Image (cartoon, rainbow, N blue to C red; front, side, top):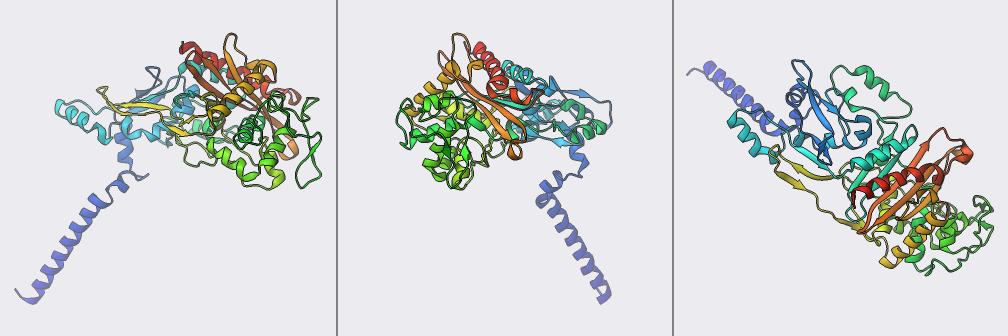
Amino acid sequence: MNKPVRRIAIFCGLLVLALLLRDNWLQFVQADELKTHKNNRRVDIARYSQPRGNIIVDGQAITGSVETGGVDFKYKRTYNDGPMWAPVTGRSSQVYGATQLEKLYDSVLIGDDDRLFFNRTVDMITGKGKKGGDVITTLSSKAQKAAFEGLGDKKGAVAAIDPRTGKILALASTPSYDPSKIAGANDGKEWTSLDGDKNKPMLNRALRETYPPGSTFKVVTAAAALENGLYKDVDSKTDSPLPWTLPDTVTPLKNEGEIPCKDASLRVAMQWSCNTVFGKVSADLGNKKMMEQAQKFGYNNDKLDTPVRAAQSIYPKDNRPQNAMDGIGQASNRATPLQMAMVAAAVANDGKLMEPYMVDKVRAPNLNVIETHQPKQMSQPMSRDTARKLQSVMETVVNDGTGKNGRISGVTVGGKTGTAQHGVANSENPYAWFISYAKGANGSPVAVAVVIEGSDTMRDDIAGGALAAPIAKKVMEAVLSTSK
């Protein structure tokens, strides 16, 4: 072989080698990246080439699939009572992607999960089309309906959990939207309207929005007082002068109305929501101890997965006057409705906080269960003794205090109202809160948090006991009716 031919042969060999290297690189190194690339249309075509598996509540599918008549995207997602269930399901859109359970369990729902390999193999052998698995939730349809209808045209959210297990029973958020209306390839007009809506209907307020918790946080402050030995008895007088001035300032902390707050016991202070008592408790304990107590309840946790990740509730590192305000649920204190439901749940469950979750099982198309969630303790925010004392106090709030609208005939209910300041110098309408639990024959099957962010109620009439407590009552009744 002469030199020119040899050079050409070597050059061609190098080209073949480069081609082989590139081909293997694409197939084995970049395969996953290319498969999930946002511009890879083939992936979306495959995703919507058959019906998705379903999200299940109380044994019934709250999702479905319908034929589109299109060439590429043969099926699109549908939702039963879409606005009510949107905070649970999220969306699955041919154009705008997936969120929440639809996103987290996408591989199961479309049948690509590795655990469904056997099913895919059998379907291939028998000539059947690929099928997706189902996601079975912990939600209660009755509780969800009570929460959603209770919120009505108000802007707000509800979170309800089973204190004994951590099962999420309801997640409602209003205003809401119907994911069915943005599921197809030609729903751009509806998407633009939703995306530009100043009321943020696609925001999951139950999990992803934080608010100042107001006086509902006084339950945490009372727990801190008892756990740290500041006070041993909920019925003994506290060292709480009236007026009381915020530390390092000349600013007196005010109470709402003429209520018996001077040296009030923790029971009386909770019953009438005395700011001065709990502000001073927070100041006496100091920022470090208050932060530690809040964190035991789940605050400052940026990885709280339900499995949908909840926004981080914040008890901040703060100076002395701000810490006093943090202790009454103001200043930089921020919490999700789920977080405050967790506070009520820990009290109801004798001091044990269970990890909240909303997916009970995942099953294959042949109904074999491929994943089961086991209840797991998250923390021990307080002793059994402290929890029992707080139960007694919270039950006083409902029976003889600001939470009377949460009472249920023949049922023991504990709760705490809250009306949280909003805006600079409280210039905007306050947030109305209520957290509660109800006891049945086998302990407490439900703890609830309700927040009303906005309504047509006159400013002077906005209060947690008036607006939020009746909604919590309906949710508790719904759960109790199914747990007998």
